[in-house]
Image 1 (cartoon, rainbow, N blue to C red):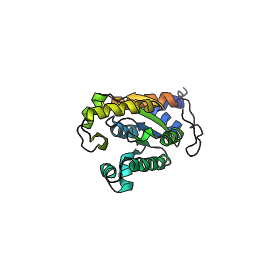
Image 2 (image 1 turned 60 degrees about the horizontal axis):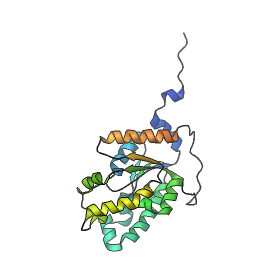
Image 3 (image 1 turned 120 degrees about the vertical axis):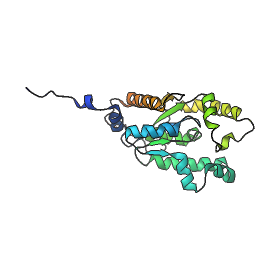
Image 4 (image 1 turned 90 degrees about the vertical axis):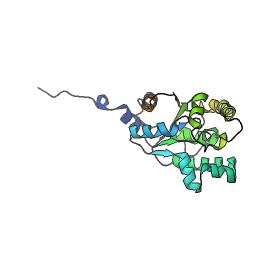
Length: 210
């Protein structure tokens, strides 16, 4: 009796198919502070057998000071310029899962680079979830205001129309982290299914926004 044959596709996991289709691209997580980009990013990277990179940690390493210190000493514009340079460098570093700061995607140059070099996922979280999470930490420079709740509401209204330019959207809510990771895997797999290799990208930042 001959041995039964199995197709390669039947034995290939969604994670393996995603990895193959990504090629040199990254998976970039965008969204508000407190949306869970670092928490979900680490778990997603583990599932995909990719390195995890936190842009904020890389910025602090490059500057030799914390983000609150950068804001206090140099101001937000200086921070945003450095943030854009660090993310541009990270996007050239090959496949990885990259968690970005909440304001980084607001810069058009960064969005163009991400569009060229990555598949982006917006982790969308409601204001009450964001506030519940960020109030545990005192190192959020943009929330050092008289009314942090109003500040979060303003930031959401300003940023969500821009976050919608991300390739995929996954709701971040109070469920087990692995459920969110599962949904990221499903969304990536659906997006990349059938791509034997990544599409060609335009070098630099000249690629048009979607």
